[in-house]
Image (tube, rainbow, N blue to C red; front, side):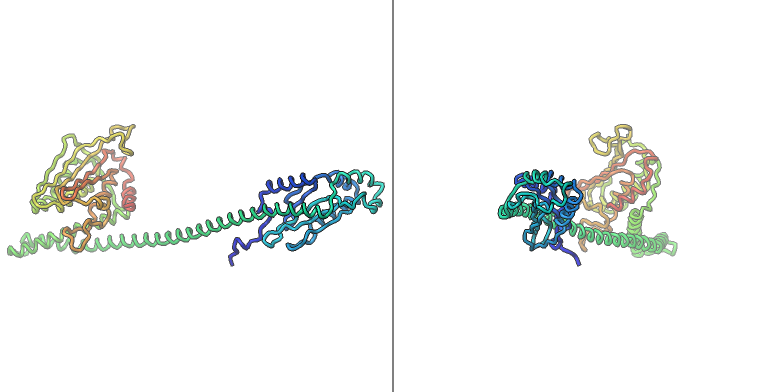
Length: 478
């Protein structure tokens, strides 16, 4: 069963600012010239201030019999039975002096005791007669001189003083207890919130681990299914090509159209499966970069041959501009060809007939104020290959620009959308560009057209080390 902070018994030493409390006791002791001692409920001393009795008590302590009596008196003061509902107790010393023992109570709980004294009652005019038994070791005349230095008061006056002191100390204890309870409640609430947060974090961690397991299963499933689909699909494409070539006999014009459609759709499906496999490899970190010193012109030429049939079919104009200063660059030519092919394919797909698709290739000088890009130690690295693919197509809404690079995202995701596709092309493009330590930018205006710009740094082969891990990291963050 959990214990509430409000049910805990307060410990006086924990409640108080000890130094401040002792200063208050010292002030009262000096004011009345009478000693004040405070013990907690377990008998531990909290405060001890002595006034004018030092010489008197010190003298009694020089005589062995009275020393024993003094020790017994101190023990009685500390351990005499006391309860929360006890009244002020009186304890007379063998020397004739007197002590008052006051219970310190808070909320009905005994938290300590206040010892007020010793003081001389008004009836004490000389040392008690029974002390003569300790002569000549103890001089009653000397003791009487010390007694005259001790304040005298009647019980009525002493009780007024004690009542005053008790009220002040009570206010201090009350304020201290309230502050302690407030602090403990605050700590308890923080602890409860921390425990809730820990439970939430653990639940999130468990859910995250499950999601990672599901993601791995998904990637493995996609890779397995895609791989298994490629084999029969390759056979379909192969037999379609053989039929068109007349290896099984001449076909009628209508039959050639049907087989051509089968071949076209089969190749489209094979391309989609290839994109799914690419994304699966990227997510699993199994894509290997095979960099070589490559001519960008050849990469662009091969990419254009990939999309030329679709552009011709849609009656689009393909424009190519390659700057004369463009020189060979360390890249994976196959990956960059697929980057350009994907960008050109999108431009062809989303550009209406009679439109224009343009690709421009040139050198780009990095500016010093481009954070994270400019290299002041090796200025020759501060140039990039810039590839721009622009079209006069339908454009992309501004609020969709940030999401087009997400895997499986479609700008028009309705079931009746005009343009097909898996939404993987641009995600693969971005990851391949990042794997080359490059970047890709996008500008678009609805009804005017879209421009994708790829920046690839001119780096050495050694600087490309570790790209496989970087590729996987980019894929996971995407």
